[in-house]
Image (tube, rainbow, N blue to C red; front, side):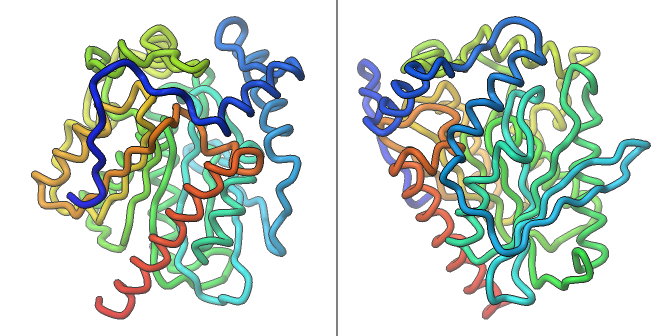
Length: 327
């Protein structure tokens, strides 16, 4: 497995200065995230943070909001299209937020940069959030929308030449689960998975969960993740659609995993990388020094995040180009 960095098991490293600067500014502006209280007030505060984080983000020439009907609900999605490519590859994307937070607008900034750096089009899926909608609603929406677009071979009448799938945190869980479901349904067209600091298991007994929970001001901890699972699940489900790390992983497309060395999900991502390799899946795990959980949305205000997205965009552009030349 190329690109895996070995890290010390000693005390946690310091948080990257760029992320410290972001946290300092949020504190000064009264925008520190909250995790307790009414879900709507928590979402509202997170959206205020998103507005601040994305205020420098320039829209692409072509961005369009779409709606997909799935099981009686219209699922909002947002399409971002690259300049100068009439038939790009398309990446489906699932945002993070513990299955109960997050919005299309909140991921505008990183996805716009992603399109510019990778040359891919992106379809961001605003899947149903808990507790209003419980498992498996979000999972079914993601699988339905992706399979529908793939069957058409186009989106908004624009053809695409290949597909990738990505997500961060809870969205990475949904993306990996969707890839497994698509494989089982006979879809063999996904070329790459890109998963940022995903949560793939309900097991929170690992060292990183207890050593890094809440470290550096991040709000992900055993306590908050337990609350997210309780909100998401109806009957305490634990099948592979909830815990895709436990699924049969054979036959998945190449997977790129990105996680911070200060993320409680570190051990989980390492374990997934090992299981993917054991299943014969081409896997690249990158552990980012001094990085915490949930950094993707801060690409416009933290240069280190901008560099991470640029590097991943370049890598995916190259991988898809090679695959297109050698099917």
